[in-house]
Image (cartoon, rainbow, N blue to C red):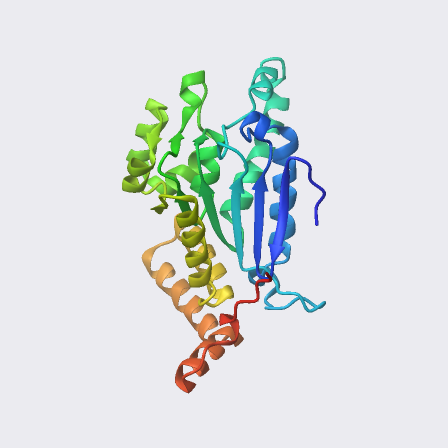
Length: 283
């Protein structure tokens, strides 16, 4: 596993848990933790079923199918580290561009991760923290959670997280929150689609997480990755309607004829669970 100091990675069978652990700064994103998260995302991606095509690794351990991102302490993530932001004023445009590229590697790595990604959010998720939320496939929040695209309060733009928030909220919702830069509560976040469910206790958060993981384990892992990549392709599709229809037919044909597709069909006809439906988590 990647060596980390400000976050930690734990693996239980096909589920990886990434925990931000920079509680003295409310898990704010500085250069070190950004680099560590990028390394973790790369490592887990390369060991996913969606990337390898295999349920099991050569050594006999399960390849990954779900990634949970969570944080220690009172707050999920307070956004960019204030010292890093302050230092940006003394950097050249090229240096600031390099910092932004590193940050985008984090968000793109989470957004495009082959696994089903789940964020468990408490306290505040500001700026880059809101970006982590936007990039996750499923978000569970506590009632006291506050989310904000807070960059405009500092006179800067939410540009790096912008594409991901835009995809989650849509144009008007993203524009409104980016201009106001104000904090919204968990119920408002649920209403507009920034989060997917609100858990009203620590126990309920654990139950909700277990339920989502159990549900995704019943889906074909390669089909899950394919769905994510299909949406990404649709987001940037520039061809005509005829070529789009042809592309969807090709994808459907490939998936139906794939080993996973054939296993899914066979298990359905034979009245049994498919090979991927077992829960291989440890403990």
